[in-house]
Amino acid sequence: MNQINDILPARFGLWPTSIREVRGGWTAKAYRVDTEQSSYFLKVYDKSLPSIRYWIGRIGVYMPVLGWLSGTPELGRNVIKPIRTLDGQYKAETDGFVYLLFDYVTGETPGSGGLTAPQTAELAGIIARLHNLSDRLPREFAGLDEDVSLPFCEDIERYLGAEHQVGDLSRLIGANAELLHAAVAETVRLRDEVRLGFQPLVLCHADAHPNNVMQSDRLIVVDWEDMRLAPAEIDLILYAFGTGWPINWPVFRDAYLSLRPGFHINSDLMRFYLIRRRLDDVCSDITRLSLEQPGEEEAATMYGWLDRHFTEIRVLLDNKRDTCK
Image: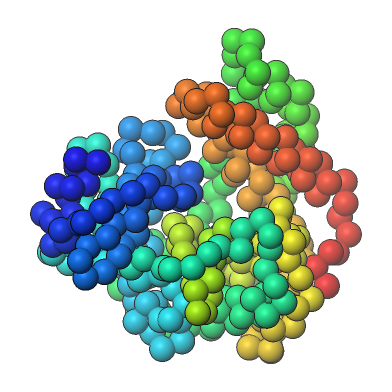
């Protein structure tokens, strides 16, 4: 906390009257910062954690784009606004941590309760407008194209092939080894047969689930860490398949297509992205459990996530029917 008190005035020109930790995502600790004039949302990334280094590396890619989006008439009111440092940067950094600052959004996240039908239609409009803005994206923004090399598949195969000491993680992964091998093979197959064919790339959030949406006087989308240029389906899987939240896909689909009438959903591509997402989650959980020694409560949560991921992967591999219409 002392370092935050030093960073805010030195790098952002802010003198806080209060700082308190609030709920955030797993990649960074989150704080509400109050000053005499306003309130801010601060994210603090720990550079020592192996699972966080990838996300820190993406900051320079997506934060300038988020800054641009926050100034557009189409989305300026629906995206969280980043605050630059005194020297115009989108992050402040020390030897151990990286700091990102945003305007504070007063409101609640729909979370596990899911979105109402009006919220679903409103969010569909935000995502559609985001995709439609792709042609206007300034050329100076680089590094946004998605990575289709599937490095997490290689990491999973390497973990499966390594010798491990007996433990809860090794037993759980071992019990699901055949499933993981099959999922990796199917993901690579879909990537090669479906993803690498021609498909327009659009600007995507890639993680706009109900925990990354705030209901203020309007919906505001937060946590843009996974922003990338990719086929639109990478965003749509969250709503077509639910992925853990009750979401009305027909309402979302109809509202989305009303703003993108020439777009046709590729169900094979949807399936590719959903399996890929789950394998990426598995790889992240393995990394955190094996390398970062989380506390007992946090570890129990991650084991629960792994169980759910394995269940969803098994269903996806067993069921190849089109569920996206």
